[in-house]
Each structure stands twice: as structure tokens, then as C-alpha cells.
Image 1 (tube, rainbow, N blue to C red):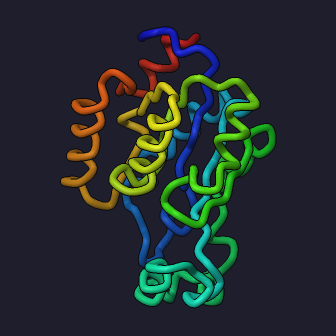
Image 2: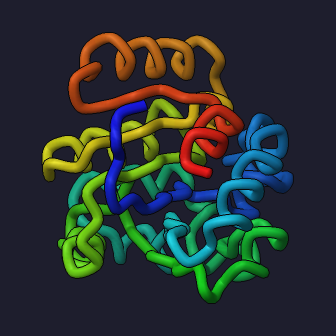
Length: 194
């Protein structure tokens, strides 16, 4: 592994609404939770959990997000029990020292707060885990690359609701972004940094 310098762990959307029985359930999320917990537990001070937070009502959203939440009305704040927006309980126990960053879009980079925080911390590399590989993880990774971070994706610690697009996203990241991104397994990464 190349020297990754001052790294931070971004755990993408490991929330109860993706783990529990909701229309947005991602069955793989339960399977990758042990890996998410392993890296976050040993490096909680370096971990940032993102949370995808829907608006209270579809009409509160901007632009095409209104249409999105008209389709997924049952996942808006007025219908979804508030606790389901929270992190998986095992991960929530790590906050603090781990941090939580709420976002209203797939990408955590839109409003600049996360980049500003990471820049102030002197972070040069990001280790990315969580879900979904082909949506929020992908936008997190591509934004991080655009912002100049070296990215490590832990391939056994990301998940999706669709095997085919998960596999395609992993292949895309490994093939097209090989200069700016590395793929590792969780144990391989933890061994390399210890």
C-alpha cells in the first residue's frame, strides 16, 4: 500500500432505515456491519458517519428531489419514524469521538462543510465504507477524487441492494480510477496501517 498520510474514514449511510424493514432496506448492510464496526471501533477518532436525511415533506425538497420524494413519500420525515434515520446502534455508540455528518443528497460534498472539516484536519486520504456502492458510496468517492483526496475503498465493507450494479461500481472504481484510488479488504487495510 502506498503511504496514505493523514487519513480519515468516511462510513456512508449505515443507518437503521437501510438495515431494518423499510422500502429502502439494503440486505447487505447487515452483512458488512462487522467490517464497518471493526474499522470504526479501532479508529473512532478518525471516523465520520454520513447520514442521508430525507426532508419532512416532498414539497420541502429542491428540484427533481421533489419528484423523488413524491415516489418515496413513506420515507419522508412526516411518515418515517425519526429513530430510523439514526445510525446502526453498534456504530452510534462510537459517537463521540466519531462524528456524524448529515446530508440531504447522495453526495456529502455539496455544501462544502465536510470538505472544510477534512481540510482543517489536514486529511490527505479517505477510507470509504458503507452503502450503497452504486449510489451514495460512488458519489462520495468521485467527489473525494475531484477534491484531490487519495481514496481507499474497502471492497468487503461496501454494499448495495443490487449485486450487478455493486459489482459494476467496484469494477469501475478499480479500473478507471486506479491512480487516485485503491481497493482493499478490511483486514488487509487494518494490517497495513498497524
